[in-house]
Length: 217
Image (cartoon, rainbow, N blue to C red; front, side):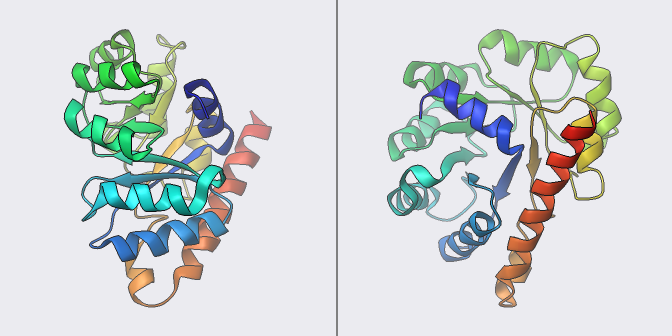
């Protein structure tokens, strides 16, 4: 899957699950539960122990059946390691131009994090493919996405932070390209309690919510 196909697929699914866990095993269970719910886009954060090895393992296990990316990537060196492990998109919490350049060099989608309009344009002009708005909830959530899209309609935004089932549709209607979803979908407490099926069910509900919201736009 090339970069254009990667971006298109993220847009089609509309959800980027942010997988954070205290162990690779928990993260692996979470990714399987999410995939069973119909979401085949997965962001493995660098805060997961052994994250790069986990990315390799997921790609070996899933092949073309899942789109695996890396999250919480803070520098170009880490981005390169993730790309060599097979990551097809790189997500960062901030705008780091060398990281964006590394993604461009390898033909991998770059999703830097920004918050203010100035940061959003800085990311876009540096070559971001999508711009992660983080933490979106701190700025008003969907209303902030709508406000940004007014003067910046050309920038594809991925609100992250505070996105849940109750407000997901509102973010889509506000113009979000896709949604970054963390603990409201990937709740490791459910895994520890042996209830991974609850994550699967929430994945299905997120997909349905996004699809319904897009039909209503």
